[in-house]
Image (cartoon, rainbow, N blue to C red):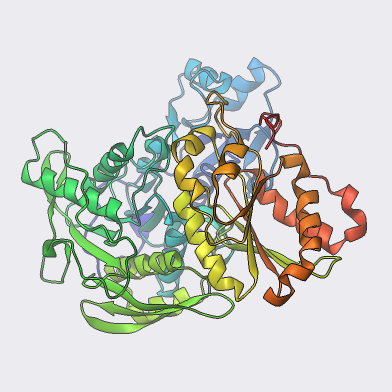
Length: 577
């Protein structure tokens, strides 16, 4: 965590010249003691840090020790790991807390939640606590099915470069920001806003960003229309006079805007807006004509569509961005750079602004940067400052994250990259970026499907997501919160992948040895391609493979000393490929 915010937002100066909304909510009581259940998780750890930096008292518990728990203890937070010694010890630990904030992974019958309620202590979920934490700030909520972590991190970096010192909560560690929590001194709060479990449902942002909208969590949302509905509700909660910054190229975003228009036209009617998007470019590019209605294009003297907010008329200006012609903010001439990164030219309302040069590859990263640029401009940051800062952005953990490079005993040069991609759209985008980065090398993808429900719902889409790879390895499904009641196995995906032709199922215990063997044997095949760019893809334990593989490549004599950790015992591996 970086920065200290002992005074809170009430004592801060307004951030930038574009102070277009004054928050009316009272400042939350920073002195209260909050006890976090699951404090070591990525969702609650940054919230604990922000509350502590604001002058509050913090304690917590978690099931296991971790680097995050160690970091929290280093900040002076008391964290119990494992079950309490006995009910009396638990009561002593909880007594004195003003509120319990529990991880969404914990059921209501969890012993610590039951004990807290027996003591009369209010129990809140993360989604309940976020509105209280952010109420007194000028909240910038960054949402979307994909890209919200990178966009929120980029925006925070830009604001800091511009002299705005925001508070921020981001869904991954960002080295340039000192972690996933940033305690700033201004009244701006940048929050990565997640749709899962209704986490963003109670937020009232002054400025909301929607990067894209797609069916991503089939365990929670039965269909695409239900996803459109929750994002529409989120967009409709923008404070009166606020801004809605959206990727105009994305058909799911267009569907949400259509729903908003219908609400504005008949706010008291049932919310049954058609799901047909207004603009559905298959491959949006700089030369495509704008197909969305002109009223979506925000200009300084034009107010966008009226948005319904809890039954009252509220006006939020829509600012769109993208590759397509006619966007408020447009990136033109996207060009990959040799060895990684990209360059584009940015236009704003038909006027050339400057060059967007990025260190990270992929059109999706360029769109995320454009979102950060557009959003920062609404907060008063001049584009030149934003473009310079974006050019220095080095990424977030597990987002095209370079693990390292090595040469196999057989002479194959290998670069290993780890990425969180676990949805077909994310996999396609990451592999396209890898192809840009590869510069003639082969691209190998090692994927771990994440949850049975996602694989079942999107199996056909997954099967076509790997076309930019030369080889694909599919390992066992990571169950996460689910059990296997769908009869699925990783081989179901491996068999359906037709491009590339080399697609194999490899069980989790055999994965490292198989990769080492194939990389060694590939020396002759890839010699003319100058090596292999190998990506590990997924939201589960696949992230451990890259460092272990790199260690074995660099210490070939010690293979037996670094086995794959058997953290997937609940995953069925019995069905043959």
